[in-house]
Length: 81
Image 1: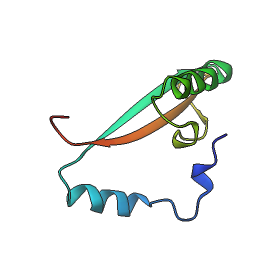
Image 2: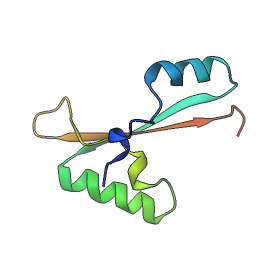
Image 3: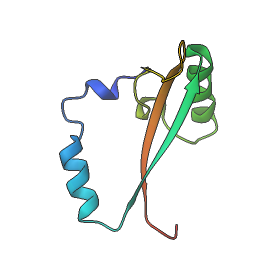
């Protein structure tokens, strides 16, 4: 389900920052926080609606609130789009 974080060819933070500094793109992050089932079901629902591929979301991470998890989707956009 969440295998993109295991990809050794995935961009590093340093490469992502350098790419953003050299472009006219804006970094956006979408965050889902809730129960494990709720977050997973929402990711799959957004995928079915064409919002984002399941593998683009981060692995489930502990959320600041006790007992919850979170997942983050990072996207770039050109200002004005």
